[in-house]
Image 1 (cartoon, rainbow, N blue to C red):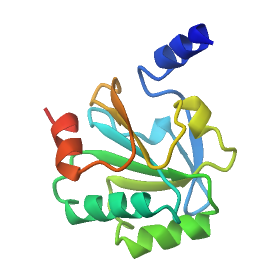
Image 2 (spheres, rainbow, N blue to C red):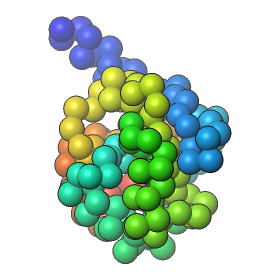
Image 3 (cartoon, rainbow, N blue to C red):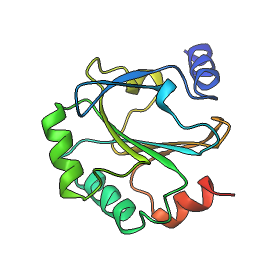
Image 4 (cartoon, rainbow, N blue to C red):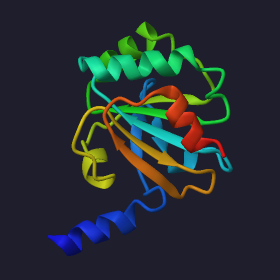
Length: 146
């Protein structure tokens, strides 16, 4: 058990290889990530109250998040995800992506067990921190932008 945990920690030290479905039915994978830009993965569910509040906080500070790529990820159907994105006015931003984890691999791949869960990587794709639960935008920005 402990060995597995250590392996997982090693595995997510840099962004693991992934491939999810974007809202237009295409593929979004680590090849789509911008280089030299910090990355924030937000694991969410559209019906989770804290996830909605997290999205709201990001929307209210979206100018400050311009230099960060934000990937909202959910195992829900793309329609639900799209509705969530529209509701929070987060569609059509170059740095914000919404993807559907159709094969439900994110939780295992990134070792997350709660919603929302935020996984922060620096511009070199090195893990900064994994945060369980809702987190203030200021806190995220402080951690993601040196």
